[in-house]
Amino acid sequence: MTDVLLATSADWPDGEPGAAALDAALGRRGIGSAWVPWDDPAVDWGAAGLVAVRSTWDYTERPDEFVAWARAVEDVTRLLNGADLFAWNLDKVYLAGLGGVPAVPTIPADDLDALRDAVRRLGTAVVKPRTGAGGAGVLVVDDPDDPRLGKPFSGHPLLEPLGGPWVVQPLVASVRTTGETSVFVIDGEPVAQVDKSPADGDIRVHEHFGGLSVPVALQPECAALALAGMAAAATVHGGPLDYGRVDMMRLDDGSLAVSELEVIEPGLYLDVLPANAEPFADLVARRLA
Figure 1: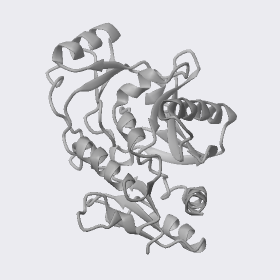
Figure 2: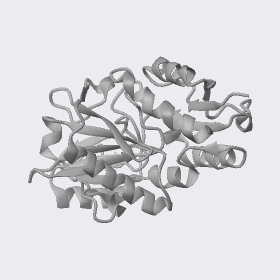
Figure 3: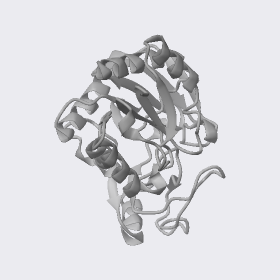
Figure 4: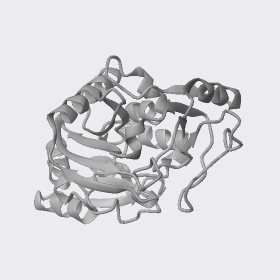
């Protein structure tokens, strides 16, 4: 029996970038593991003691199918974080419901009229699919009559075009310069920080858009906000979370605000931070014990 199945997608059959570090960390703990596509009907999920969702980055194209799969997995074995949490987290409207945790203001928009109204209110705005990942479908607009609004959009040849519904956020000036910070929280502990900067003229910090990710020392201010964000998600979830990544950016007044709280399949940035495999492997070992 395989101890843990690491769910990935057909586009990433060997796992997330740097996956070998996680494979090795699990192996050092005597944990047998395998990377398997989440939508492969031949996989016997119940044969594993644990399932961890990792690089399932095509779920944004089939969110309902993905949540149904997660619920089916929970019927036969343990799934880290769990299907209810996934269903909540795949809709970016969750950012408007984090209680008192500072977050980038987020306006839902279900149709073109709502999109235009939000852009009109905000001036320069960032438009994102409510269910999206990897920067797909992200637009920066300042004209409510921009012809791109309301249409499926990719922004990159490797990404599938995504349409609505959407969320609309104000453009935070610092995202063009200092970018975003990500803090990884595993089993209730902030374990690492990565600072991510965009390419010149962009706001997207992903590597396929020219962004750069650099591991840095964990800053207390960032760790505190990450814990607050995870606590808010735990309140919704009804219990502690196994893992998560909290993205944040600096607002115009100098304060930090959550820009994303990723508790489905947050990349561990193992290609630039292979040490991140260790606390995740420890988490798996504890849950299997």
